[in-house]
Amino acid sequence: MAEQHLQAFLDETSFSNHIVLGHLLPSAWWHPLPHVLQTWLRNYLAATLVYFISGLLWCFYIYYWKRNVYVPKDAIPTKNAILLQIYVAMKAMPWYSALPTLSEYMIESGWTKCYSTISDFGLPLYLVQLAAYLVICEFGIYWVHRELHDIKPLYKYLHATHHVYNKQNTLSPFAGLAFHPLDGILQAVPHVIALFIVPTHFRSHIALLFFEAIWTANIHDCIHAKIWPVMGAGYHTIHHTTYRHNYGHYTIWMDWMLGTLRDPVDDSYGKEM
Image 1 (tube, rainbow, N blue to C red):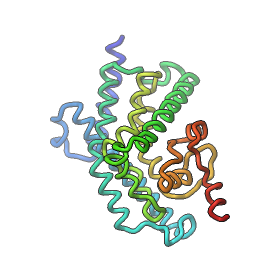
Image 2: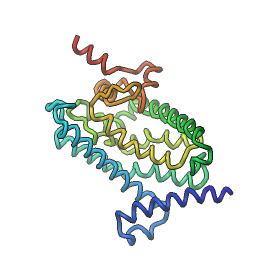
Image 3: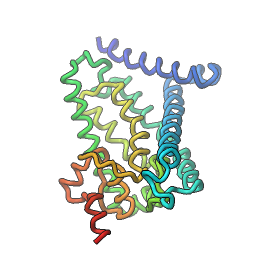
């Protein structure tokens, strides 16, 4: 029974490898590789595609299609600033791809609480577990992010790479993954830690890891969506300018509870005064 349970994960990752790699690369380039390297290559190519597709669509929408609607002309980042963000992100992408590869290896090995189908627990319990998973991620990412600021060597050698983008005209959706590789991995590690704490649906875990590329593109566009209690771009832009507020990831709850929240509406009002 246990072997069948683990085989289901291996079958899923092998299927994903064949779907992605089979459509993007000649078979001779990837088929001879060991399973774990196939998985890494699939994650690398998929993450790169998600990064570029989400970034390009988002930039086209806010900078060209809706030009001057969401972002003033003098606040649009220069082409060189965006290209630099892409360069930093692409240098880190091979290392980012190692984290989902590691998590998939641990899941296939039976070290985590992952399960392969929602019917294993039923939809209501799946939703409860998903909520618990997201709470763990929110808690973990908040504290990792905050310590990357509070511990000076971590900030100097890791997180400062991302905080060179500290004005509206230097932030863009492509800045979302422009981190030192270790910085980006550390902030995603709570997704993996959660697998050892709460039963987690395998495909939901992988989907949420890849959703990070879309989410981080969104929170670096400098547009305040005013959707409570979401930690959107309005909040995150303040983080990039004050460095001491709004460390949260998906929601404002951790910042609200720990006194690090700064609201974009209050911030705008203070500037007007």
